[in-house]
Image 1 (cartoon, rainbow, N blue to C red):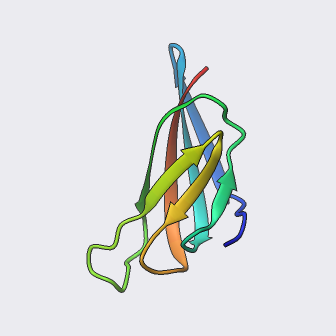
Image 2: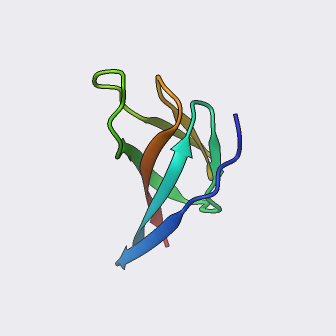
Length: 86
């Protein structure tokens, strides 16, 4: 388990919501990301690589702006989507 740094971030705003798209190049199960976003409304992640385990997804959870990743295998390429109130 390690705290990860993103490779790129995009932000798109509409009304009082902001969608942050955060890309990572190497995520392992239990890794965390300190988003610094206090008001996350929804979050989800996609593995953008080809996993060796069929249909292996990426799980994410948020506790006060700290996102934790879960997956059945390590070294995943991941795009994280964070919807927050601005």
